[in-house]
Image (cartoon, rainbow, N blue to C red; front, side):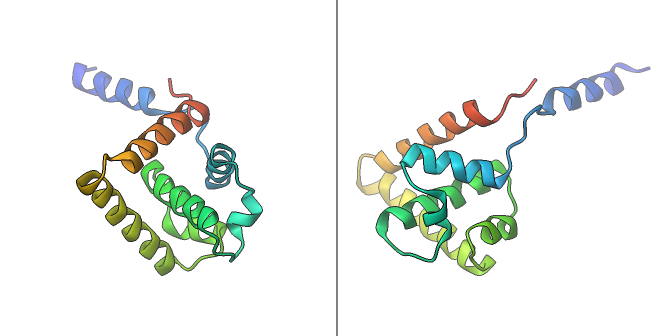
Length: 123
């Protein structure tokens, strides 16, 4: 067997995760970190804290590779509304980096690190 084939096989094995999170687990972890109730985030209520939690969940879910339709179904949103949230959150992050100290971007980065360490155990 050539070394190229062996190399490809070993790369695949390293990328396999033991505990791949689901969108529901991610939502629960985000709500736990932000001190929110997952049922409130799933509801149609539009309090600032709940919308922030929902936007954070959608943004982090996209970075974890979840499908937009699955995340939208979980928080009872149409996929176009999910895309609107994601685009708005991207703009907000860009403005935070540009005009402020980048606190929001830093907060998102820290939350990503926390979630990766809590949810994913890769080989």
